[in-house]
Every structure is written in C-alpha cells, then in structure tokens.
Length: 618
Picture (cartoon, rainbow, N blue to C red):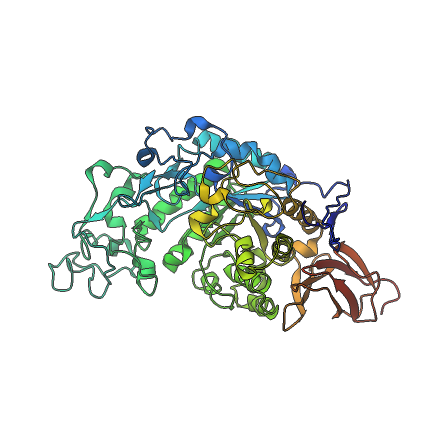
C-alpha cells in the first residue's frame, strides 16, 4: 500500500498528516484548466512547468524505426534494448501518443534531449556505446532515424502546440560526433602557448598561417589567413566519414580546435575536445554564422519555443553574445516573443556566484539552476540546515538582471547527468523506510514547484524511479525495460518495477506534481512573485519565505519542514496582513497577532498560505 498523499481540492493540494496505516485520499474535483493554444505565444517563461525527457527511453510508438534503418547489428545500428548504453526504441511517435499523460500532470512545456541525427555507435573496441542520448550529432538538419522523421517532429510540435504546450529543443554548438582522428595517434591537450597557430606541431615547427593574428581578432580578414589546421595535431578524417556531417562545411577540420582532449580546467575547458568529441572552433566567424543558420532554421521551420544549450560553459563567451541575440530575433520574427534560452552550465555546489557569471560575461538569458539543485539536495536529502537554501536564494542578486534572471532559470532536483533526486535521498538516509524516502522526495519536488524559477521535472521521477548512479544509470525506460540494472531497483510509492510500463496517473508523485502545478499556475505569486526570505532553523526544520506578485499584489507565505518531526512555529509576516487562506497544506485559520502567524507542519510537510489585508487594517 502506498504512503499517504496530500489530498487534492479544486485548486489546491492540501498536506495532511499520515495515518498509522498509510492511505491516499483524493477528492473528486477538477484542477485548474490547462493552458490554451491561444495564449501559447504570449505566456511568459515564468508561467511554465517543464518536463524533460529522453525520447529513446520514453515511449516506443513505432518499432519499425528501432534499428534506425541500419542492419540488425548492435555495433552498427546501436539498438540493444538490454544494454543501458544503447538505443531502446523510444521515438517521437511514442512521445506524441503520450501527450495526454504528460499534460495530465500539469506540464506546460516539454524539453527533450537532442533529436538530431547521431553517429549510431562510437567508442573503443569492447567499450562501445550508442548515441541514444542525442549528443553525438552528425547531421544538424535531420531527425535521427531511430526517433522518426522531420515530418514526425513537425507532427509532435503541432500536437503539443494545439494543447497549449511549448516545445524546447536541446541543442549543441560545442562539438559533433567523434570523427576526426590525429595522425600522431595521441590526444593529450596541447596548449596555445606551446602549439601556437603560427607553427606546425609546436613553436619550433614549420611556419604556417602567416599573418593570422590569433583567435581574438574577429575580423574576416584575419580568419581568412587561418588555412592550416595542423598547428597542434595533424587532423585526419577517415575516408568513409569524409562527408558524414551536415551541413557540409562541418566536414572541414579547419572549423575544429584540434588540440586534444579537455582537461576540464583553464584554457582546455574551452579549446579541448569534450571526451573525445570533435570540438568545434566556435571562435571562427564562419562557425558563428553557420550555427546561427542551423538553429535559426529549426525555429523558422517548426516554430519551437526555446533552446536548452548543452555544454554552454565550454564555449567562448563571444559566441554566445552573437548567437543568443540572433536566435531571439529569429524567434521574434516568427511570432515567438517569449523564446526561452537557458544554458547548461554544469556546476557543483550551492554557493552563489558560480553560475551567475555566465549570465553576465556570456550574456546567457538564463541557466539551468545547478545551485538550486545542490541546495535542495543538501537540505532535504543530506539533512543539512535550511540556511543553505537561504544563502543560495540570497545570491539571486548576483545574476545579470538579479532576481529577474533567477525567476526564469529552470530549476530541477535531478537529471540525466547527475542522477535522480530520489537517489540522493536514499544515499543520505540509508536507514530510512520507503515511507520516509517518499516523503523526502515529495518535499524536494514541492520546494521546486513553489519556489522562484521554472520547475523542471525529470521524466520518470513522477513514477518513483530511483537511479543507481548518474549518466546511463539514471536513464531508465518508461516502457517495459530489458535492462537488469534498471529492473532490480525498488521504486518509490509503488510495487511496480521498470520491467513493466510506468505511466500511472495515480502514482503519488504524479498526483503531487499535478496538484502543485495547478496551484502554481492558478496563483501569479507562485509563478512571477518575488521572494522575501523569512526564517530558518540551524538544524533540519523550518524554512520560510514570502512570494509577492508585483502586478496583482498577491502574497503567499511558503513554509517547509525539512525535519523528521512535526514542528510548530510563529512566522513573521507583514503587519498589514489580517487574513490567511489555504492554498496548500496546514495553514492557520487566523493570524496570532499583527506581524505573526503560527503554523504547525508535519514531518517533511509544507504549506502555501495566501496573505491578505482586509478592511480595518491601517
């Protein structure tokens, strides 16, 4: 039997204390209406709930494309549904057929891993894997045949738009699939100082690229003098793959850094190849123009609503300062004024300041909020003080436009790279029973759904998936899986396993997200409201803040209990408040005194309470 779940009302999910025998109570009442197609373009990015999905792992709508048109050899087609690092059969047709399920949990925007045509298999003999994830692109103009066709992508976008749902593409400008080899058969990073553009194979080598003034001079005249790519290594393209990349200009080694593998620090973080993938020379003006044309065409042809940019911190800032404005202008011309661009800047730790620089120096409009993820993980999964959340939110002023930027950063608690939030909860609480693991996982999602930023749900989290690790170990199948490493996991809130299909609209986490989504979208303070931080306990316990919508003036008090025990606290509120109403959880029925309200929260409980100033308040 599943643990207890907060009950649903017409527009609210109310947290109730768990009984000795866990039960689920759900009132038969409608939730807030789904967004309409009519307001799709005018809806600001703050008013979204995003669902992130890997198409290969979500739904197999057309088994005929499982091999992608290649022969039935796993090392040719990349298809092996029993191996976690190979294609499993999910596709765009399956994703389109499951739009009811996705929208049913209150999702308003879908972001999916790259669907461009990939090199099916790469890697050394005995350690091969497939491009099921979409990040080994060879053709930037076509959908990978394992996922379907460009026509099926259009059908998916049109179907989502007809429901009022936005579509965000995952794009890559930093690298392509691994095709370029070096004649030296060595791939250690070679720096610009030791191997300048002016000499072949090092400072003592043959003079080349006469008159080239380095990669910081953006003029066309300067770059016309860079004619030899063999300054650090001698790039070689295998004969069978000389024309593998599309557009055709991507087949020329002159448009790649060719300096060896990144060491993940200093210069190599920008100029090095990303785990052997061909690192694109994004400083080159031909590359800048080419990438603008590639991704602008996807906007023109399909009317998509945003880009998540992969490996953004491994690209030079000047590229983003040219690319992003061009994409926003292209979208505006297509009638998409609220085009959402967010960069993936992988960052460890919850301390403010790390992510923020990329919105200032690189001028990215927003970034995936890794500091938020880290803070929630530390507090909810690893039992740290809520002051970590407090300090993380205080850092919002460091973004380019301060809190306005923080408001449009997609927030998340787990993903396909770092692992699932439930995994962190399990790691941090090895002796916890399934009921506690579920409650902590629910609390983490509740903080995400009710806080500033754009909440982003990782597919499968709503079905209680618990990853064994990061990367491949956190990319389970929603349809019946044949991967042993997935099928032996104990899922949260259900007796099911990944060996069967998991699209249960009654799963407690699905219902939690559905209810909180309805509350969020029905209350402008929870989508666009600025946060005024309140109080926190020095140990696991209370964390509170107020969100205020600048247009309507709506105010909502948010309070979370991160501890395993019930707490009762007086919480400071504005002195003009004389009435309180429940949106979510156990709100008080009245204030204690001007400036204070008393809340009692169960273990891992939370509340969202609307604060109003009525007649007679001066």
